Image: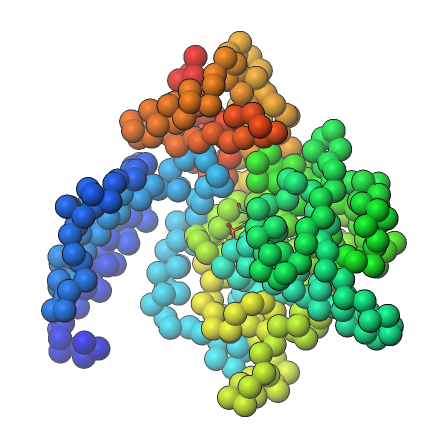
Length: 453
Ligand SMILES: Cc1ncc(COP(=O)(O)O)c(C=O)c1O
C-alpha cells in the first residue's frame, strides 16, 4: 500500500489537501454537534474492512458524516471549557508537521524543528521573565505538563534530602481546590498526595495561607507547591509573589500552572497579575488554549532544565548516541520518548505574524469579556459571580435551577446557535463564558445573554 503505483493520481492526498484547504478557509464555520452512536452506526456503518473502502468513500464518510458530528471548538460562540482557536497559519502548518515525518525528540534527528521550537519557548520564557538558562519542551497538554514538572520537583527534593543525609522522602503537593483537576489526577499517578490550601476572598492561593498549611503538615513532607495563573473555572491568578516568598523560605519547588491563563503574560492590561511568576521553578502554558495553536500543545519550561534532564532522560544502549550528545534533546525534559514537533505550528504562526499581533489578539478577547461583564451587570435577570481577571466570566441566571441551565445549553446547541455549558461552584450551578477566540465578538456574547431573558 506504500507503493505509488497503487494510487498514481494521488487521489487520497489530493482529497485530504482539498478538505484541509476548504476547512482552513471556511468562513463562517458551522458549530455542528454530537450525534448518537445509533445514528453514526446507521450513517457510517462499518468503516474498517479487510479490503478497505478506498479514498473517495473514506473521505466522503469523514466529510459528510463524521466531521459534522464533531463540535467546532474554533466557532466564535463555542465558549465552554477552554476553546481552541488556532490562527489559520498555525492550523495550516499542522498539516505540514504531519506531512513531514519530522522527529521532534532529538537534536540529531530534528535539529531544525528543535531550533524553531526553542525560539518559541524562549518568547514565552521572556514573557514570564525566566532566566536565560531556562528551557523546556512542548508536550501534548497541561496534564502531561503538570505531571512532567511535578516528577522533576519530587526527584529534585528527594535528591536534596539524600544529599543532606536526612533520608526524607517528601510526598505532598500543596495546592488549592481551584487548581486544575489534572493536579489531583497526576498526583494519584505519582502516588503523591495533594494537600489543600484554603483560598482568600478573591479565590487565590496566597503566601500566608500556604505557610499555615505547610506548618500544620510539616514542610519537610512537601516537594512542590502548585500555583495557578488563570484557574479554569474563573480565570483567577494566584498571588504568585507571596507564594514565591514562602516557597523560597521553605526551599520548595514552585510550579505555576498557566495552561489556560499563561497567555495573559503577553497582555499589558493584565500582566501585573502575574508578578512573581519569574520566580517559578517550572511553568506551563497551553498554546492550544489562548495562544492560538491547534491541539495538542503545551509549553513546559524549567528555570533549571538540567534538573529536568536528570529526572526524565531515558537510558538504554540504543539511545546512547542521543543521551551522550551535548545538544538539546527535547525528549529529555518530559514524560515520553517519541515526540511530534508539536511546537512548530505555534512557531510558524509567531514567525509569520510577529509577537505584537499576539498581544493585540489576546487583548481583544479580554475586551470582549469585560464587555460581557458590563452587559451582565446591566441586566436584571443575570448576576456576575466575580469580576473577571482574565478572559473567563462566571455568572448566574437568577431563578434558574440546574435543569434550567441544562435545558438552555441543549437548546442553544440544538439550534447550532452557541455552545455554553453550565459549571458548578461551591454546590451552585452557574454558567460561564471562556473567550480565547478573537473571532468571538461583543455582539456574540450580547446575543447569547439575550437568550437567557
Ligand atoms: C489551569 C489548567 N491546567 C491544566 C489543564 C489541563 O490541560 P490539558 O487539557 O491540555 O491536559 C487545564 C485544561 O483546561 C487548565 O485549564
